[in-house]
Image (cartoon, rainbow, N blue to C red):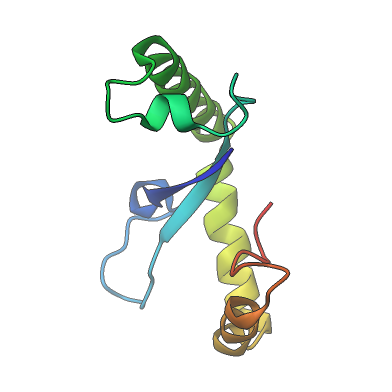
Length: 111
């Protein structure tokens, strides 16, 4: 499963924002979890309690992937790439077009 994790990237900027510029610095990280034993995720979503061991194993895997992303300077580089893209492209149009694309499901510029 691919899980989109929202991240606050403000703390990873090269300079702390002193309100001199307009910046979003929000971002996301795709967590890749699985494969799940039942291939559907039904057992973990079950209203009867589901598989708690699997749930916590996936939570730990998400934590480990997030830590690896942060320790590899992923957020700093993601902010730089996004900032660069904003300066050279019509990002509003790109986001609009990819959000409408059946192929990208709105995630065309992510992994």
